[in-house]
Amino acid sequence: MNYQITINRVNTVDEIEEYWTNKDYIKLLEKFDYPDADDGDAASLRELLFMAISDFEPKDAAAILLEYKLSEDLNEGQIQQISNDMLLDKVCEEYPEIGLHSTLFHINQLLFKAYNGTFPNAKATIVECGLVPAEGENDNVLTKENILKLLNNGLSGSNLIKRLFDLPMTENAPFQEAEDILWDVKTADNLNYTITTSEYWLSREDIIASEFEGILEIVVDAE
Image (tube, rainbow, N blue to C red):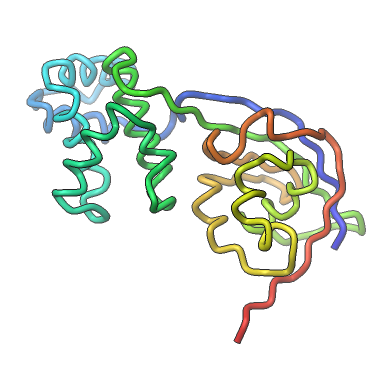
């Protein structure tokens, strides 16, 4: 099916504000030895958390956050290693398991802001785009795999997704990694989409066209 793709807006951000909830802040305050926090608004709880975090060594604070969010995915040794590595490198871009990149980004950026830049600063990209079928209406919600394949023609040849995943991006082949590359996809009408990912995967500079065409084929899994 042919699609007309329109890139309406591209934002580079250093945090996804809605990711951390009041519930998260209250639980984390307890872990950082501040157990009597009131259930206030997010801004006040966040400031309290930053104050509580500042009493800890950066690597120890990183370990607490990693244990809180990723204890089911990482063992104690991995948490200790990552908590050290986070001070030197953008682990949220370099960690081999890309399924953890999103959570590692949110942890990294909370620490970056709490310690005023002690941790490396990572970025996310938010793209607002129209993905409209050329022939009539379409009631199907596009998957993350569909969206990345449709964006291919508007991306620079140096884009990391295109370089690492040339075959699934350009041919009728499965692209399971798309689920982890795109962190979030929202749409209210199945035509206009807001997608969120790491700047590591997709930067503003990677998008070289504001309007272009794409062809979406049905992927057939191999038997």
